[in-house]
Length: 287
Image (tube, rainbow, N blue to C red):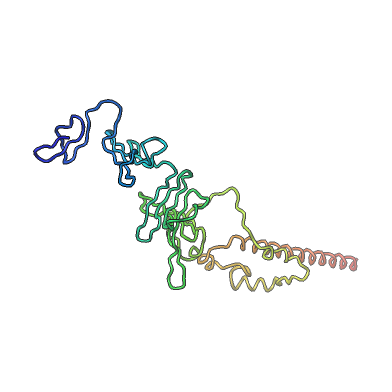
């Protein structure tokens, strides 16, 4: 050990010109050695194992016992830092004694967001985001859980809310009109090879062909179209602009109109055949 007139303390072989108030170094040129160690305390006596080491290459190691690959708990090195031996990585929110961030050892499962400090195992997902739904009076208001932000366009382009509602596109937030209660809102084109929409069997239009179905007379249909500028039951242009189109309901409704049109055509065919028969009958009588 060497102490300079300025009070700097040099520790280590050959360290006779310490440049800092406490300078620990060595002139040894052999394998990397530990410059600083802290040993455990076993009932007032020093244990034979070193628990903390600072090496001359800057590596910092915390271990459970002497430094070996199997005893390491934490280590820093030139390429990053490692956590060993089944130790989880935690960021603790001391105000609530909750984990704000946790990575589970072995599996790598990650929890983001406050969770009790003694939680059960993470969910099956590799990434779990815990968000508390905001409450205003008796109403629960979903809050933003995940955002993907476009630094160039300066806006959120992908958002998942705490109730699972997902918004995609440059127009986020999509929170008014039909989008207010939507579980998936997309501001832009959706491309898919196949889309299947579930619909209740009672809403399908085959009942039109039931013998008791009352078909609107064509004269009444003409009056309705002339007055309203759209077919009965079909939403108006203003309604579509305000509320959008329910794809499943609209497909069922269009099928209903096609089936009604089929019935009209069948009736017209019968009337046409009846007229032809009557004409042929008149021709026969006039011979």
